[in-house]
Image (cartoon, one colour):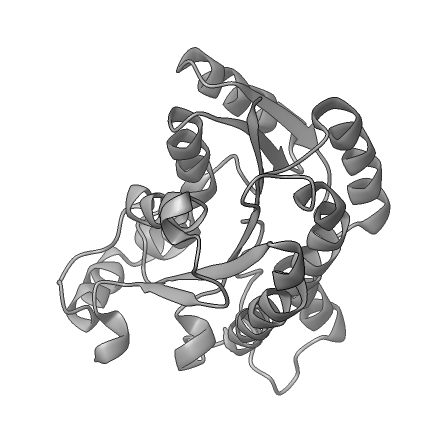
Length: 249
């Protein structure tokens, strides 16, 4: 019997690294993105590595698209061992004064609504899984309120922290565990704009990290692998900081 994991936002950055890590650990990896071309390319890349993978096209902020995709997932796979809510992003920067309502709504939808909608659709399949687990992505911004113009992003990630603990409470009776990872500065395309526009600024961020380097996607993926494994079978409602000591400075 295959072990199935769905990773939203599973085609790039940390999400794709998680897909590779879990695929190599024996999971059937279902990846999601809103870009069909990229999704198919990443599906082929995973399969070329010997990983059983399939791409599902849907917008993680769109209830109708999510529900339609989950009908297909349910019919084809029947159950999920893990849901990794990796879809999210900064969505841009804006000060609170003058912030457009449309911008506020879009950032919350991307980072918070997506977790609510996808998890709601996944719970029936997780109930059928073996040692089922939910992993959400919050952020160091959810603790330190983020950088300039990223306040609403930080708030959305703080909301995910509380939501994760709420899931842990509500789903424990079904043996579904819920935890979250909280990455610090990880060297992924998430920071590409700053890296290109102001490389000196980007490099200076290392000085705020005890280990004086950026994290790598694989270092987040390995923690996710642990959290959904039997080794973490008594762990739920936890938020794991992965930041090289960044939160201590």
